[in-house]
Image (cartoon, rainbow, N blue to C red; front, side):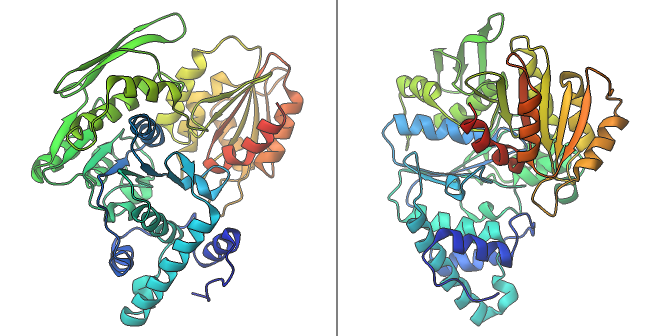
Length: 445
């Protein structure tokens, strides 16, 4: 690696890291990060919660953070990737970490990495972007005097960098086909990979309604305290014409009734909320929360980019759905919205995703497609996505169109210019798609 920056500017460090190991580069394994973690002496005196799964990880993390903050705990939350600012990846007590704090821990990680490289060889300490930044955030949390630390698993489970942590409670939200080249091409294979965030004798939550047998078998093999949706916890509710009106949750030790629908939109959020409550039930001896903390936490939770509807006209929906499972949930959520004459979609995605599967679930809900090439070597070209959309039978006539753009921003400008006041603009796909539009969309309201 080239010499680290002497600058104290976060932007300089992020540019340096991107030059060494682009953040889109994937290199699974725990040996490198474990060596540097041990060199740093990273350990936690508070409960650590790991949250993995195909979809629903961000929402589950947000629910946990919001409820624990309402209960008066000091909480650290690591999520990935970010939408607009890197600082989104590290929140302490509900606030994004300051640039100066992040740089301090970047410097500590690089010093430890250099010591490991000098002792064991450069290859033994060749950290990826995600590993390097993840270690810096772990160290930041270690020094933040937390009551609870929540870490989102980035890609898989077994070999994901965050799995180097010794979790007190682990949650697998859902299992579906994604990152098939790395995790396997069946739910059983992917379920086994994700189950490896479970720990012997500790709570292991799975909120997928139909968990793979491989996940259940692994939890039994290591003697984890497995808690399954529909067996150990569940929810029930009353649904009105357009949304859930009230719901209740039941677990092993009791019930919480009279819950208003969470502030995060989408019917799938009750499943994510149920998994979060199952984890909090399991952690009650060390992190007790009241029913009022739960109610207020659900009412005040925020998570940009997950079926986020911006105020104003035309209606703008932001959603980071980029696999078929998430696209199906997005389609269902769109169906429960009010009528809009036309829907304009801004979409960009990585080429290793099941793009036809995503398009198949949403093509009948979109009238005008604005396809973008993303600023990443892994991006699918907008022209290639257009060809896939045509292959799926999407018509091009007076009422339907497909256009391609060099960037998400250009696609957004075109969609915004073509949409009427009563129309809907759906911005979805990769985090780079939604993040690339989010600032522009907010400023144009």
